[in-house]
Amino acid sequence: MLNIDTQLTTDYLRQMVKIDSVNPGLVEGGTGESKMADWLVKTCQSLGLETRLQEVEPGRPNVIARWPGSGGGKSLLLTGHTDVVGVENMLDDPFDARIEDGCLYGRGSLDMKGGLASILGAVAALKADGFQPAGDLWLGFVVDEEYLSIGTDALVREIKADAAILTEPTDAQLCIAHKGFAWMTLTTLGRAAHGSLYEVGVDAVLHMGRLLKELERLETEVFPARQHPLLGRPSAHASLIKGGLGLSTYPDACTLQVEHRLLPDETPADVMGLWEAAIIRLRTSDPRFQATIKLDFERPGYEIAPDAPIVQTLRTAYQTVTGGEPVTMGMYAWLDSAILGRAGIPTVILGPGGEGAHAAVEYVNLDEVFRCAAVIAEAAVNWLSITPP
Ligand SMILES: [Zn+2]
Image (cartoon, rainbow, N blue to C red; front, side, top):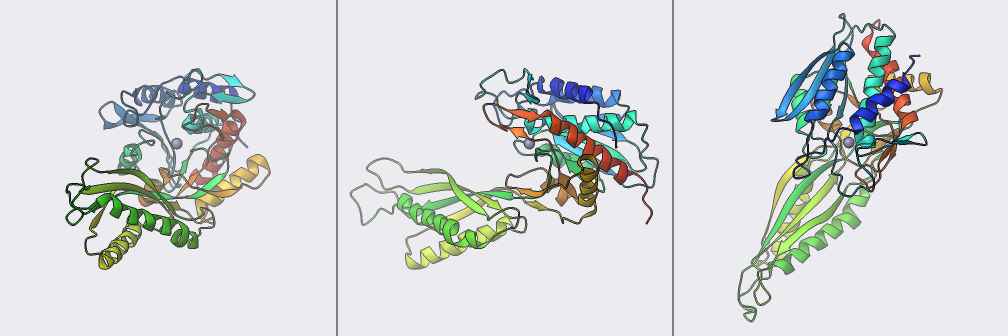
């Protein structure tokens, strides 16, 4: 088993948490990921990796590093995001990176600079051990996961790998499934009229009530019947609603933005179909009812078979490092693994746990940072070496 340098790995993490990389898509005036990218370039170069920037948007680069294999082995991508969410709600200095009781605090410590430290700690251990990979080891540090994931979209245009490990927080367990999501806008159309003219006016807000009732029916009757062993049921909620012109006017339109959370085998077209059927049904029973639906944005869910080679490699590595069995789990939240999976890169999510992603107090458990580094290093040795057919 490889020895993780816990001091070095902690230093990596501390330095990264001290760098402000608030996502500018999410927070107006956010610093962005460029200082993180500069630091990662220096650090990857100091580890002897071929390192370059991939400019995703002006001032927002991914960092791509490669440890070239000697040939004949499978390739592996270790990846995570460099951006963090906003800090305005945080109780303490968000970038002080203080350590208390085995935990390191600060914005991004858990989500997910702890996971990036696990990657760097693993590579440092492999280098110190004199390991020589047969397959290529790729490191991909991407921008913008917390907003639109343009970083991983760009990364998979340039990198192909036989598998990937994404180090988002999983409490150091193996996550093999997560949900997708879809944002859509429903619009009901009425007819504006003076509030006294009930023969003329058609109340678009009232008609939206029928679609809200439909949403409740999906939530209470349709979705509970669909269960995934790791992900529970699909869900949807009313996110934003807008309508009305004035107190004495029939509203001409009302819009409702809805978010659906989808199981890995569900598509936005599936839920769009449910809404379209409801609109037709409501219009049949009342010809004055008029509504449209539009898909605004979507990301698919993700799932990998529990016996897929990269899952097995990580399970064995986990056993070697801890002497125990990992939990294979699902996560409700969406992750970049969906983009990697869609690009044909089988991915497992494994990263250190803690508390407070996006919250007022955020910390990562340092023991889990080291444990994930050890599991990743062990898995990399097995995956990147030539295995007999
Ligand atoms: Zn994250």
